[in-house]
Length: 184
Ligand SMILES: [Mg+2]
Ligand SMILES: [Zn+2]
Image 1 (cartoon, rainbow, N blue to C red):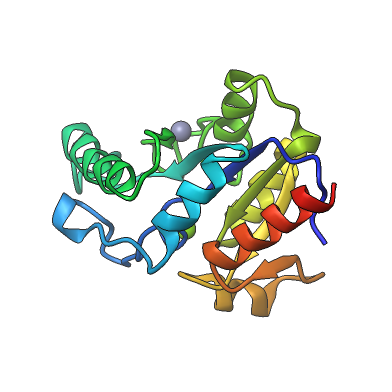
Image 2: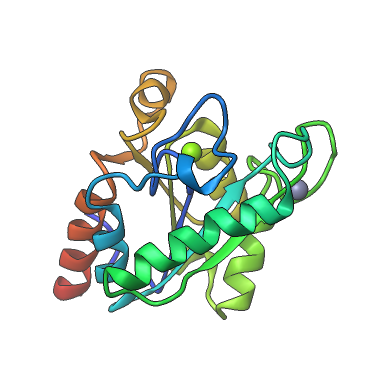
């Protein structure tokens, strides 16, 4: 059971909100929402603050530009608002794995920035992702780590010891968050 006091839900992007690709998501056409994910965000936004924390090292790798990333996020924002949601804050790390930056997950930087900007606390924040670095970043930031089986999630679960709190997808997580809030 999830805690009833959650006030901020942070989400990884690729493999959580949209289908991931080993070739990276480089242009808006490659960004396709996972079934039910946008509707889940719309529901969450009615009860808690929601933001996205995403590694986008494809920028550092020269696979796409900052303008491309902004165009992808415009498509995301427009799909979200068309589904009845509000614009969502997206925190991204454009750096590569060897940059030593503080924002690339598994480091905590993106999450702690989001928590600070929303005036939240780590203990009332949940971070949901599909990869080991998401779970590690949540722990580093002091938030509740949640694994989703979408994207790399099934593979991540197989190697995660002890097993984290896990849900099939963002829809199932949302149902559980809202149930916890009703009971709290
Ligand atoms: Mg991911
Ligand atoms: Zn970074």
